[in-house]
Image 1 (tube, one colour):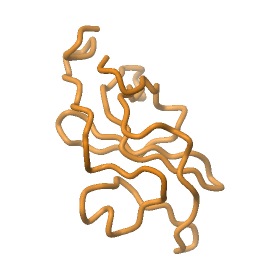
Image 2 (cartoon, helix red, strand yellow):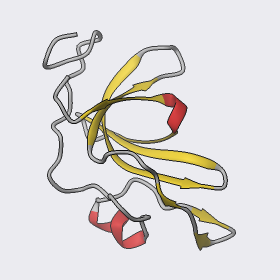
Image 3 (cartoon, one colour):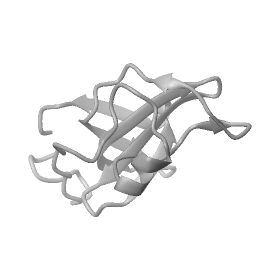
Image 4 (cartoon, helix red, strand yellow):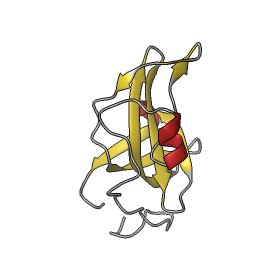
Length: 110
């Protein structure tokens, strides 16, 4: 891997200074502002807690075919169903995945 892209040539997103959620669970207003990727609800009620994951940070999303997509973690929450992570790639595409689907890389640019 080089400093600007992964093995597939997709560039790394910049580590954001805004447009992420840390230290609390997201609600609909966070989605509307573009700060959050998802809202955790069970039976219609907000649920969960912030996951103990540094936000924002670089990560790789492991796709179903085993390829790795360079992303930034912008949200992480845990509830009775597991730990869920909100991600964005360099094109602005958003993903909601479970923690095992993500390789966390920290705040230093890969």
